[in-house]
Length: 112
Image 1 (cartoon, one colour):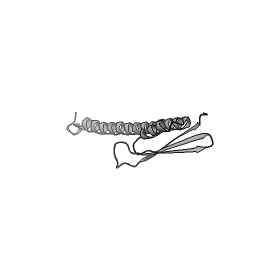
Image 2: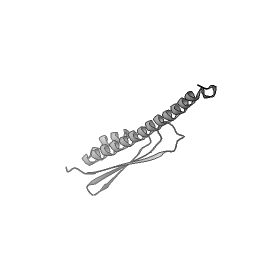
Image 3: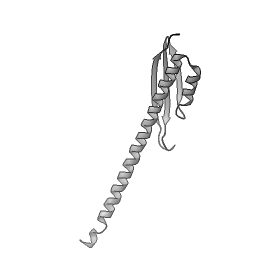
């Protein structure tokens, strides 16, 4: 092995480690955004279900359980209950650009 080649493997390993760490952080951040979207979808479905049943207390509790910063909008069109949940997701930090998330649920009101 030549004197000039010493440390070459170490530098390549360091660069590969940094790239791998950046990849892992990016994948974890995407997973956090997807989890926030799933939470918005669950909130929309639960609020719509409770509104369709006419259970105001349960609907209010479902709205309170929404992800922090989420905006929940309920509207009725005839017998249909529509719920929109919007969230500007910023997992982990406030300095990264927000990701606008939107979930909807449409349920027919129950009779009775």
